[in-house]
Image 1: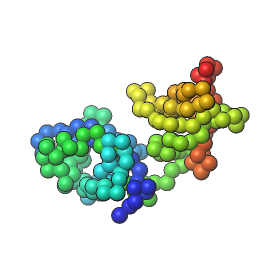
Image 2: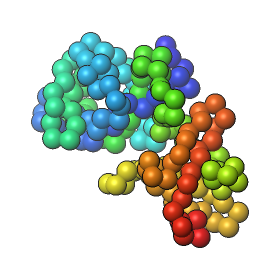
Image 3: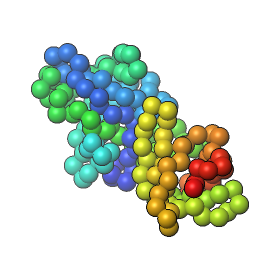
Length: 177
């Protein structure tokens, strides 16, 4: 059994679908075909993305594309009532079961607590939260004088160093004011 620290988020249950226990999954992985393959096990997390010590194990039976996500049937979810219990909860798998991240890539959950600095090395603040909006991710960066929302986009984010836990940014004029 993987420890909660070894698990990474790979999806979120958005809602039940039908009466047989299928759930609509918002895919949060670059490897959905492998992660949601028949027979694959995933761990059920909380609505906050935590695994907890007693994370439930779910076994994928069947997966099919549906709108902007996947419809998934799990062995352990047999009807709509049980599927309702999973609304909003995250799904996780051990990091060791995913392809290694490339240089500059980071898991979303790792961003919290990272130091944000300018290209010059000047510290801006610390990431306290990450928000998902239709345009992408926003980093909530706590500074001495309040906080600022920084879009996680290629135009602003110059580098992410997982080892040093640093996000290096080049913000447009006025963003940090």
